[in-house]
Image (cartoon, rainbow, N blue to C red):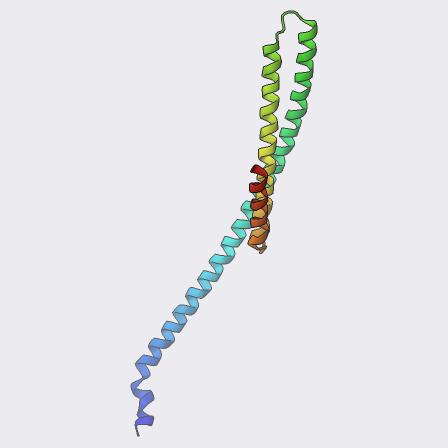
Length: 140
């Protein structure tokens, strides 16, 4: 007799468990959608960063070419013009050095954004760790 009445008395508990399961299912669905949105945002950010770095590298390369010509011209001008002194040559060289450093910085940013894109598309952390371990060795 107890087995026949057990479902009747457990009816409230069964409905509560059903509501709890439905709520958990909805939470999982929302979490999944958010994970997809986050992944899409990560890919988008990495692509934008990569595109920005490529454009910056292109501009930096043009700047380095022009500043290299400026340094060469300033050396020639110093050689043939009495009013032109070595300080102006040094200032041109300093500008060239700063442009080269900017170029290197943007190349590093391109590498970082490529790694972030790889990770956002499902790549593992192994590539990221290898890259930074190698860059640490280069600095030492």
